[in-house]
Length: 377
Image 1 (spheres, rainbow, N blue to C red):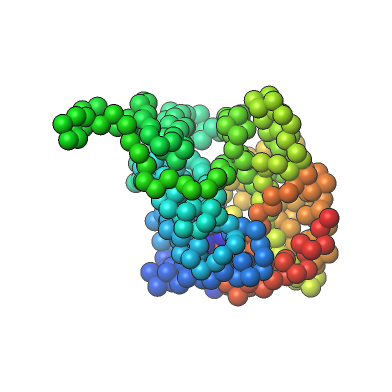
Image 2: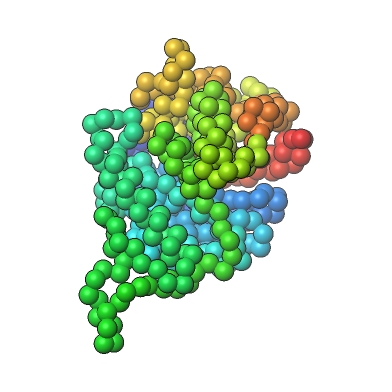
């Protein structure tokens, strides 16, 4: 769930995203609705429920700043569903505080937390929370990109050391734990112990959004999240992920192992009804996201990635198979097409667009659970 407020005026035209300003009450109501949606997902026997971490979004598109805290509430109201954040922006956290909070959620939930991690995309968030944002595709921001990658790499090393060891220390370029000379009862602190640490094993997942990330994640043994790319690009990265993993770990992955596909979906009685229902939210989504470069996963007419800043039409998204819609049979066939192409076993579904009503999302979750997913082989 992107986790936004309900809106009455979504679409390609005005207002501009930056002209929106949701009320505090509307944004908190969205948080309550997201928690209720997670409970519904458990009732419908979905395997996992994912949120997104974002900050300072007065527009109201994504209003969950702390998926670990919200996930802890969900854990107390459910028994079986796993809980993830796609993704926790690790560079915007103190790594030790993040490790403590994740371990708390994981233990309270009985081992149901999934560690989703990423480097961030939004300067408004990053530069107010302790990091900077660059892009592999933007040479003008190369210095910021390199700093962010170094900070992320060290933070993740700290987090994993802290979660996995009774005692640990780390001394890098960005982080130093414990720093030298801390007095403690007649001596100085040489090592730290995280309290609490996980009582159960956990999975780590990171979005595959650039060539350096594609090279790193399988070597680390984490899972890769594939979102918002033309199937040709996804297939290339999906297969390369498996090759790198096998080179690093000495065994081949099963077809869908350690790789997750993300798709936007909408089920209706006819394809025409699905298109009509999705268009306003789809156009609002890209009006909001395109300036951050997310449309570079689309394919241009030359077969290469689309130019930065593309605002795709719904027809382009459907044609490029990045948005699935139609009858239950249509959507099932489209998902099966991806399973045949990639061997997908881990599928993350977006059942609502920005501004959608939560009762519509509930209907979509019911239809997917009862009409679509049971038909997949």
